[in-house]
Length: 487
Ligand code: NAD
Image (cartoon, rainbow, N blue to C red; front, side, top):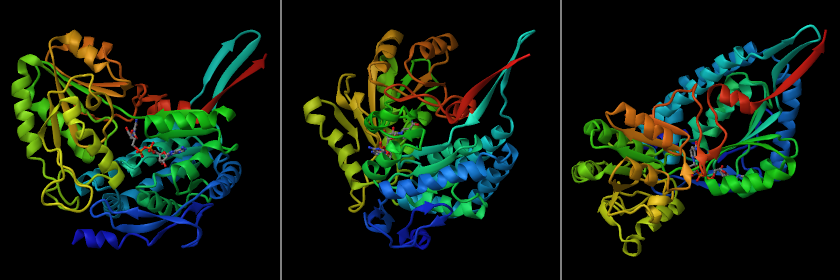
């Protein structure tokens, strides 16, 4: 029932949004947006390329000079706050569109909408508090430094939690005084379309926020290579990030790279088992396992490995897989059949690599259409196996026992990624030691992934370059200018 209601919210045609207007429906080439529940088409989506990107960038350049950059920060903040209000007002609608598009359970997309509104509010407030620095040098000079916006920000985003991740970039880019061209993920374009509609409701001046839909190698690549786009903020796979950096290097673009992960959860023998288990389940099996900071490798002290794995086995077996519109559902379908095949290809490695599929590992019997996969637990895994090193980006958890703290750290650091890490122990000294040595951009101690928007978010190693969040976002979206005044 709710699924049918939600389908009424979807336009037949998802158009580009350029210069404050939606392109006419049916204009140009298109691609299909699929419902991951049954892989039936939800909508046709405009398939942009260099000419649409060029049009959008031109509008964004004009809006930058004419409307947005001259606007006092307080005014920019007011408009972003209005946009947040529109997001809140359309919470149900946005969450339903996101659930239809991504397969993420509705309860979870509802809270993602709250986070999207928070992103706008948080960076709107920051815009009004942006300061510079002074460097008095009497009697000869008085020097000062100010932050200035840069121009058109090109934002390229992935399909997992699209609305939240898009606003995580749009809000600071605009708050800092830049204008935006967003290229949303082709597998989940619906909430970007709705967000554009809500920007109109919020009276954002035309051209300040533009959306060009399309494929990565077409619209995305055109945005990266456009000469009037000086900065690119990208979230997605590491290999895509490498390609984007190659393509933008000719023009010395500024890049923010939020990339993949294979984050360890390190559970020591003195951990609060119940809380650790809850956190492991949350970190791996919410958002359908398609979470960049998923704790996808549980490293557990061998002393408690049997007990912990037993408890995990029971919990993973009990995860309710089903229609993401059902309130009982904990795990919905994966985003796309291609992605389902990719995740499954890792499970097919069992005979070759020698791990055991302890729980799950296949399509649930009662769901024969769509991209459904059981919650899966792999045991007898060693750190050198591909399932322990590569990002699977689905509901697949691996467990690896360790002998002592040093071995736990060594295994944690044995992958190319370094996004997040989680440490479970009652020994505060050990927690701090491990946090110090683990190679990751973020560490949570005795906690699941709880976000504080002020803190630097991002990864080390192959998980990214740069940080976003709080003033770190402003560091990326503004340029410092130093002014030397002779006295
Ligand atoms: P992806 O790299 O396939 O695509 C991301 C975006 O890049 C899409 O919009 C796509 O169209 C575009 N793109 C693809 N090729 C391009 C090219 N040549 N030039 C320009 N744009 C191009 O990633 P995905 O599969 O959509 O998302 C999943 C990945 O994102 C995972 O690796 C996940 O860990 C990562 N991720 C990271 C974070 C983080 O904050 N570190 C957050 C969420 C997701």
